[in-house]
Length: 465
Image (cartoon, rainbow, N blue to C red; front, top):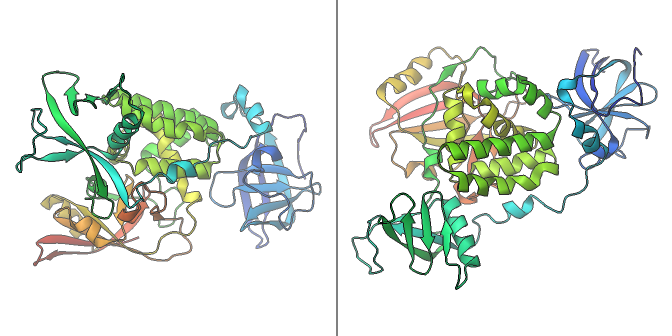
């Protein structure tokens, strides 16, 4: 073995090594050297197959196994399927120090990760799963009246605003009956919301306990928001870089390269970006609420951080809107602010387990020109892509109630050679009854058929992933 390995090297050295697999195929690995304390929360050194307690460990975030070990005899092991598996030949290992990947905090972070008091399940367990839920409404009329009028039109607050209001309501006291949203002040004693820009603009509010089974779907926008134009791709099916350009640009940046090996920093950068985007559109209070959910995740593993990021994406907030707008438009001005969160969101691919296979449904309003793009692509059989994260449902009725002029029917076939193309996120969504399956940004598909349903007058577009 050719090596300049030194036990005194910093824990965050970057390592590249090449070895011959049991199939006699060269394997090239780049990873960051980690101490066992850093890795022990996720991996079990005592799993079958790893003979040496003095093995050196290397973590990689690229395709394939996430963890490799090299024992005293320079035999390479990889951790997969809950066990250590040896390769048949010795490795050729070179070590190098790359300051772009290292910060002063890295060595202390690597020495030991303490089990945090925070558990991400606490957030997920607060989802809308109870039989009865509290919902807050405001009257669309700009007049304050508690009298019920059959012509009154009550509007539902977004689920984020609803949660912020209810938490403040539970904390209110006789001396403190006001709370603040981004655009309004809420007076619980008078049951009114007052515009911050014009105090004469006041609207009546009400608190209602409703059956969770009877409530209207309040996340309809995500299941019918505009899709990016269907785009050609130069990649072949199953290529590991089926990523959005914005995410790829961030990964290739100096900060992105470092964050690949530093989950703590990645979360911090995501938090900074969410706050910046919130301030830009006057949603600082909403942004603060979201980052309070993400803040405790700094010491968690990427697989758990990504679950929280997916959960936050399912909330009816500004976050999923600005993320998908930036991805759809390949807005590279958002690399620094949204790149970290988008990377963590897409990292769920590594912890989602088995991908969802079967039929999915998605609604959308398409112009005739856009329909023609899909129709013209049927005969070419080229792989196309959507650049943004795409919300779909296993339940066709969920997406059909919104009245869009186009229904996508998406067939996710079981193909073992591909990376995960569809994530079943029902169990971590804020609204499990939506039966949501998320398609990652940059997912590839073929357009199989485009027809107009003469009965419903809707376009029906069949896709195959």
